[in-house]
Length: 389
Image: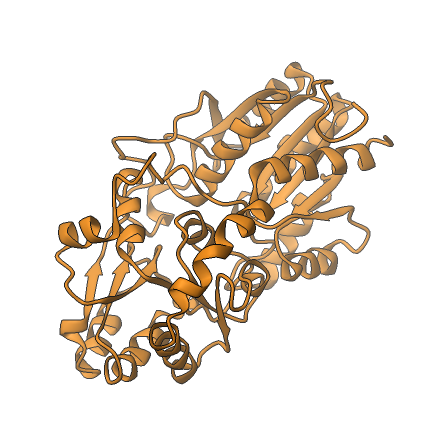
């Protein structure tokens, strides 16, 4: 192999969740596997147990969609059973990978992944790359940094998806070999053709307001939903708008429901408090005009990349890598975090000044920056660097 796209095939092992697990990391790992299999021999190693049930904040860890993104994998890693970590290390070593790619998103998995990768470094000659979704958690702690350092000590190279993650990584391992590529788009939710038009989607959802906002994804404090809810009173004071909040609450929904009542926006907000199966994602994005991500902290977001796949403009806050994936005035607006007034102003401006039509021509060009092929190219280039070419 001499360059990205070369016909010389690598033996690649992907370590991370995939079907039957749900969620963004599982989808990411599967989409990456599909792209890499166009070029290389890929083996996927999955978890037999991801989180113990008592640690998982949602209703289920499993994908119950009628149309899941299924991938063949070996489910052998139990996150709390060290014997399976050793077994996995030997299993991957027998595959003789040229490259092992590890999905990293939380230091909870550091003991398992560091053991697996340590075995690979002893038994094999292949290289190890960590793809970092969050170098450190949104709610950071000293033990998290210690655990992250433990895992990262076993990697030969790292791929980050935002400048914030690059800084966080280098603060933990200053000599790390790092490459960067933005989070690719999630386009597999979109069906072929125009099967779900804006009008048809709104009819199915029972939405009559001419201006529809969407907040999508599981709900935790760092997502900043309360600032969007506080902005809604100002928004509906100027335009006829409705907000869809679609996602499972990972913390108490009571304060949010109370805020909706206090702001007097009960008739302007619809809560869909559940995980949305794959086949349902399209209807919410197809129905919406504008996707709002009012995060108060972030590294990157798969939600912004779903919006891009559906040609939906976004309003994001200027935190983490969010400004890096939104082209100001082309695919959305960037506003200060924790500022309901600025969120409201951006939303009202979007609708009153006709920005939907002005942004529409830019989406196809922007998508080229976020292709899975581009991510595969970056992995190949990093592999060449860490293996000496």
